[in-house]
Image 1 (cartoon, one colour):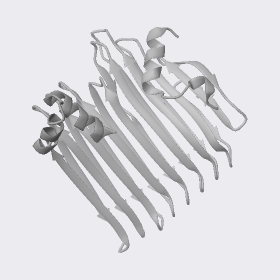
Image 2 (spheres, rainbow, N blue to C red):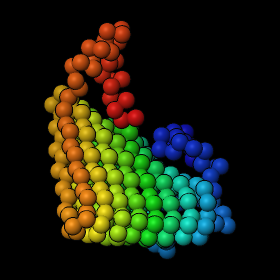
Image 3 (tube, rainbow, N blue to C red):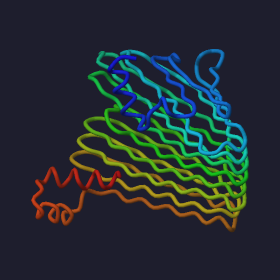
Length: 303
């Protein structure tokens, strides 16, 4: 890897990749390095378009890194990653995509991640997206999740900056006592476009889902948030979308819930608006400029 590669990795991976249990590094459509251990195995698909990750039963506190970097202009990468999480395991998966594009042609990464969580397994999935360079950077992540009885998954998804266009799709099906928590953070500038779709089916008794989306849209950027949660059993869901808009930006939120069972308890909330004047005045009275005050508020909102 060269200096640009390492800088991209540092943007999307917080930990030291060499110290984790297993990892797979993909650059410009090809695996360039990987590591396995006796409990976590990463196998390349035969066509080279992705990997299968197998986590054995009762694996505790395993950490897996699977970053993708793209440094070619006009390059389109499509990858299919399947995660098979064994019973009673507890793991952290750190994913992310960084694109460096100084070409006049679009660079695109479409990542399709499919999770199969067995009974009582637990996953924390951390995903970051970042783009830099004059060329367009386009990221379209798809996450599909099947959760067996008593399983638990937390998704922390962050679009840091520099992504010109993204369509983010998450689909999940939950069985009895399964819990899904999703925390999404997105910031857009200039004429950037970001769309998020959440589709969740609560099929088992006491299944629960909590989705929190925090977004900031600046300049002439556009964001759209759509969620559709169906309670097919005694279940609980809380969908929350909060957005700050500045300049000529716009945000559309469409949270939708469908109670298909008498004991389905489903809640949705959405709040969109500019930064409150009282907040700015309070911070500016402490000596901050208006721009510094705005940045402080936005950083705190997305923290």
